[in-house]
Length: 147
Image 1 (cartoon, one colour):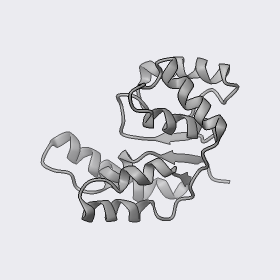
Image 2 (image 1 turned 90 degrees about the vertical axis):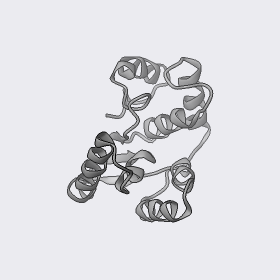
Image 3 (image 1 turned 45 degrees about the vertical axis):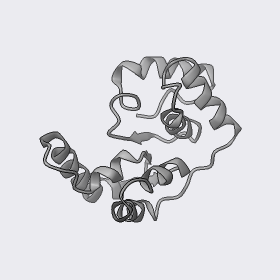
Image 4 (image 1 turned 180 degrees about the vertical axis):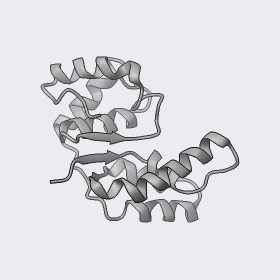
């Protein structure tokens, strides 16, 4: 069985060319290479919020982003996911004002996804939050954390 991963919307978004900024271009190139070379080795999942985020913005680009996510199975949201997302925000592991990042983390944690793939370094891939999230997951009786 292939390892599991959860894709947040930043990854398919960076698959499309973004502009002249060097960091953005580098992320685009890395995403394209990762998508072609590494993604096929995983069983990838998304969540309804990912599709909603990909559908935003320029309609032509939104269509392209949604096409990228087309074949990935959707993970279900349930009471446990909602409870975990609220707890992450309440305990300040994720922002309170917009629970989308909390839901990305909760859906991956509750469904025991091995890897959460994101370009969101502010919240989801923030190394300084890792220990805090592991503690919260223990309290919620969830796996320590997705990688």
